[in-house]
Length: 87
Image (tube, rainbow, N blue to C red; front, side, top):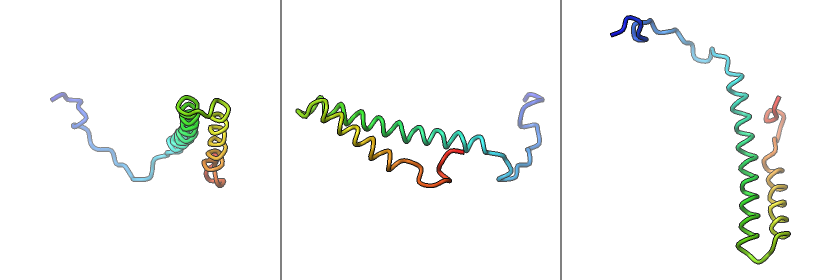
């Protein structure tokens, strides 16, 4: 074995909950918000394309349906209280 392998060192004393995780928590919150809004956009795009190309309703009705989904999705997915909003 090598003289400087990690096994030769004493373990570091770690106390659960002692690490500052504010940056990790902020990154997680940003990613979750992005996933939420991008998922809504993809759902609206899929609805628009499916209705436009797979039915006889036409472009404008398909666009109106996708826009309605975006509006309803916005009100359902927006932050409900101050703790959910970014700081």
